[in-house]
Structures are given as C-alpha cells and as structure tokens.
Image (cartoon, rainbow, N blue to C red; front, side):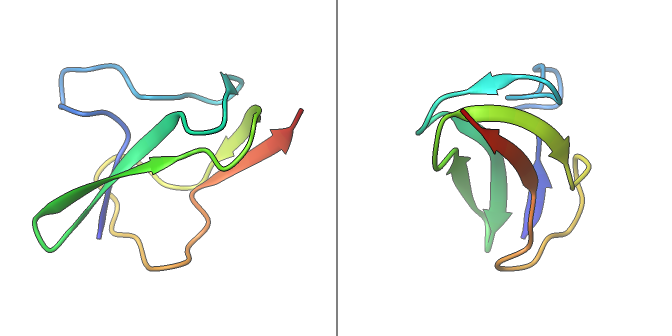
Length: 70
C-alpha cells in the first residue's frame, strides 16, 4: 500500500514526532487496492519516531510509528 500522513495533500499530518496520542486516534492512512484504510493507535502514548514518509510504499506488518506507552 501507500502511506499518507494526512487526509489530503493540503492538510497537516495526522500526527508528528513528539505528539501525544490516544488509543483509537488516527495516525495515518494506508491506500491498498484503491481503498483508504485509517491506521489507529493501539494504545495511549507519545510518538517518538515515524518510519515512513508521505507517499512511501509500505508493506504488510511494516513498522510505521514508534510510540512510547504512557
């Protein structure tokens, strides 16, 4: 699929490094076979790293975010 950091090219990214996130919060969108899939945080925490750039091709089970649990 393709990694998208925001819902449209003109919108700010869903999250950036250092942001606090809550379980269920949208982190990015992955487009696969023309279907847009929102990827949500699995737990509360802080984004410590983002492993993909906007528009990057990504694979199933690839790490996209590093989140420090809180």
